Image 1 (tube, rainbow, N blue to C red):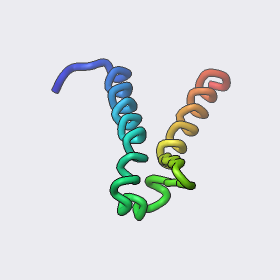
Image 2: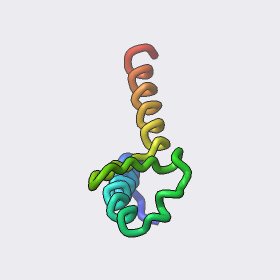
Image 3: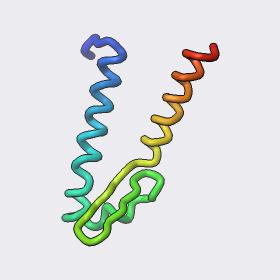
Length: 76
């Protein structure tokens, strides 16, 4: 395995997740079976020609990490 700094590895993972989330609206438009995935994994909102896709798991991870960072910086 390539020896990388942990922050670099985290950045690569987050960029990969971002690319996947950007590609999801196009995939849902052409493969509607993706819309049947459990809403906690991928939430899809579409109205007319507007598609909004997010991952509640990713949002929860972000909120928890920000809260942990703020607690560690200001309280601990």
